[in-house]
Length: 407
Ligand SMILES: Nc1ncnc2c1ncn2[C@@H]1O[C@H](COP(=O)(O)OP(=O)(O)O)[C@@H](O)[C@H]1O
Ligand SMILES: CC(=O)OP(=O)(O)O
Ligand SMILES: [Mg+2]
Image (cartoon, rainbow, N blue to C red; front, top):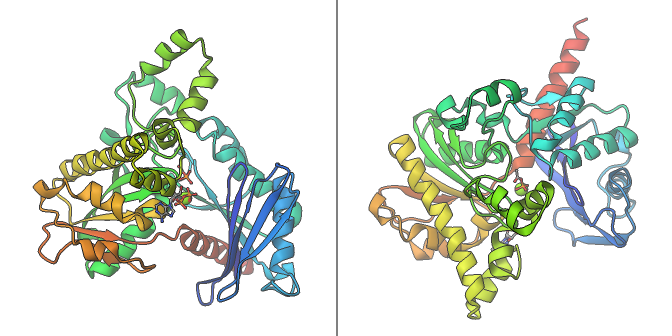
């Protein structure tokens, strides 16, 4: 079975085509700048040079059409016909309390994703555009959705409740949900395999440090606490998001700067974090480059970013009364040795001993970056959210087909 995995953003769409008999991605790519004058489609097939196509792609339906054209392209394609795609799996960031596992898309599921728009304004509306775009282009193909929030549904109330009147939780489900669950789930499974120990016996702290960033305390295989909250704004400092701050900053800023609530929300989601402090960029590569050239604001942004991760690691060691391993993953976590070093060099109280040579290795395989006698192991484990999405989609579609066959 071939499964197309889609992670739709507001102006971008990433895709991977999986062949489930071998669990391999046979093609992958992304469409960027959807809705802008020159959109870019980048398509990659193993062992072949990347193909880049610039054109005007005004909406997600056209973006999916272009992706399908590329997948069946005479020269660059990997499929003879789009009918060779048997199912589509989508990443959906917010599933609220309604979804503790992946589901097939139907009218109710779509209604629920829409209902959650205001809890994940940067993500859920874009995912819905992705789902609709697939319906437009592949009307007969079953679709599944895999939620970032699902893995965190095991958190106890002491982790997920805010200390505010409980009527707000009962009436409006105002609580902490947590995100990047598919990644934390995948990485914790890979870590247990790598360490050769059952996940049910491990205390892990997984740090997904990408564009968005979150840390999770995983106690015996289950999410016990995580740094993101009701929305993906809480917790760590991110590329453009503030992370934790005193809620009193919001009304105070509204009063002092004569801003609307929406403007402040946009400030915290899109104009804060690395870009705000550095005044330069939200991209960690550019921050590190500027820092190495002596830029003081870039250095401050970097230090604040690393410090917040270290604070969460400390909190989660206390939350679980120990940790067997701390795991770095995602764009920054997998690639920035200097970020990992800065986070780890002040964890010596917990017996963390970084091995600089191991930390400088670049690889797509899981690896340990601490010395053999480090009391807590620190690992880099590349994430693969798409593979978990493909697996869930495959399972759901196969079960549905089996159910239908028995009638
Ligand atoms: N070599 C690198 N060094 C430091 N940061 C990197 C490197 N490569 C990628 N990144 C960072 O990874 C981030 C993207 O992470 P990723 O997990 O791909 O995010 P997302 O999936 O949310 O788009 C980029 O913003 C960039 O800052
Ligand atoms: C939930 C979230 O922040 O996702 P991303 O890192 O893809 O922005
Ligand atoms: Mg990501």
